[in-house]
Image (cartoon, rainbow, N blue to C red; front, top):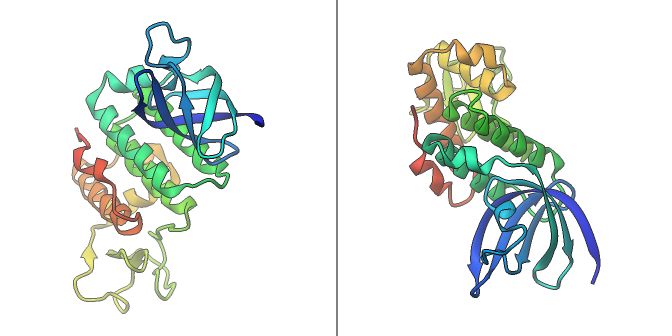
Length: 241
């Protein structure tokens, strides 16, 4: 039974038997991992608290036929406690880990791993509005998965912007000539904010109006639900300030 080690962020857990848990993780080198953590629900467990959602760990596992088995865990980032203490951050984090699980698989995705860890770290430190962190994370995670939105040139004919019509099916803003009936029309501030969220330009994001942030969140949610199969159930519960 091969033994291997990796860094991972815990996405979710569920009970198995009387004392065990199945832990779903996104790892740095091995993509998604599903593993049995034996005895972690017992009070005397040495690493039960380390295998809670939003925790980042250095983990050693035995490779199994269907499920791997956890043999050792060390904490790298203890983000769970701070996130769970703030309901707004908690709902945002749940949407993030659900998106990460949907957008990744068994193939290694180091960039997706690093992006998620950075977003959870930001939530735990209350660096900015959790809704803003979530919107930026979703846009960047979708980009890494191959669905990068375009908020500058026309997504259909590449005509230089700025443009204010957004079409999810095309993947970005479009010029007046390419604008189909029923396309969402955005104001200039919202389009600029969406570009800043995608690029992680936080000073620009911080200066945006609440109206623009609300409009941008609506576009991000719709774009995420369009591209992620079966949508993100957690988005319905996201608490926004």
